[in-house]
Image (cartoon, rainbow, N blue to C red):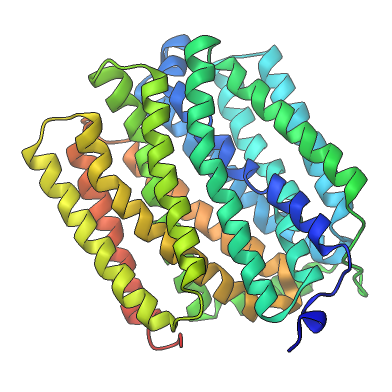
Length: 398
């Protein structure tokens, strides 16, 4: 297939840049916020568990929202859904900033995740509208790399905002970023999806049923959710370890989270470099590296006192291998269902975020916020990833 045959829209580079700018916003909703968890716990007079639960609630809302948005975007196009999603997201942030209470925090975080899905899901689907073949798989990899940039830079930005201005300014930053994304989308993007049929709940249900009965697709959801949980588990526990137990600043946590985010980004980039290698070969060595890294972190947690070094040393390589594997199965599954792009990516990423929400909720119930439970939670996640791949996916991928 030639490059001309792979490109379906002459403006695909412009659209790609717009999508790559918007995609990181999904992760920013948690990553820019987590350096402020101890401060939010103090400001609202709530427990550590409840503060961490606000992250899980956002993730759950984002996961549920994608299930709703996916089929709608496939039948009504991308542009109107994205615009509505952004407008609602911006409005919810403003409402919370004007009325900051514990109840509005929890309700707003869930609703923010819910409506942000309307902005993100159609944007991801634009890639399948403008490219096919190997080019599409490359664009999916670029998409995961752009998401990684949010993971890398958001905690640093959030740490500095928390240190110098307070937790409210994390939401002001989200407000400014989402407004810029909306402006760029409105003026630079022209509709790329023109559905032939009217929206049908029966068709949407049938499409979801076909995806949910695909064991490869469902297994990939679970595997990708666990991989995403590796960095999210770190992000909800580490702020309390760094800022409460070590008595360091939110900037110190942000810098540590930046290095962990670099691991995920670096893993994505290395995965892109080795994209031509057979999946089984890439998975063989990355799964081995993932397991050895998790075992090493457990060893460190048992033998070294808590410090930035002990916290970051084992986590870095775990997250690197997670970032290496992640784009492999995102691209593999989305390429299989390009005929219902929004529905398939909605279910895939919805499942990922629901799994993340579940693991985040479990982690928020740790009796002791220290590196030992964190290390064992990461080890359990990596072992489960290896088992899922071995039992359900290894025989199916080339």
